[in-house]
Length: 204
Image (cartoon, rainbow, N blue to C red; front, top):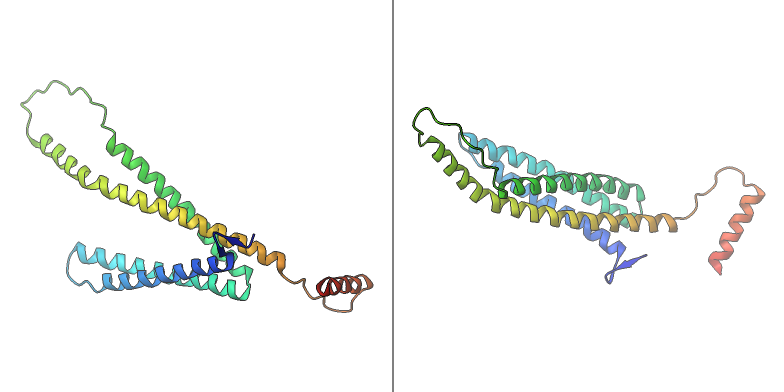
């Protein structure tokens, strides 16, 4: 298999590496913007921490994207294998995050089982009502965010899975078409016959 959806696997692998490079550059830019936020308080610290995380993630994406592009152009299957391993780890983490988001959304959507309160000794205070109102407001804002996160993670899972399959198939093709290793030292009669047969097949 060398083509899929009117596109060669080699071009698909180069696109995968280019996409990693683009994402890495974007992450570094947004991380630098986060680090540029100055001020005192938890907000500035949060932006600084997020900026550092984005810069580290962006540099890692640049490294992996460069591995894929260099490995495809120079037929270095070892570099493709490194990308496949880390992409599989990423796919596993995304799947766990997707399951966690599904469980969280289900717990927020499903109403809790009502519990019969004990007979109050003192008159009820409005504190409980205020807490319930705050929880309802949080749920109102949190549900759309979780749904959006779930959709993004699901799309990322599909894209990562397709990218992994593309790189794996292209790596298998490279391994099949790789030339045999050149023997070192004096050649035996059997090795000479094998080399002669291979040369005859190439000429034929």
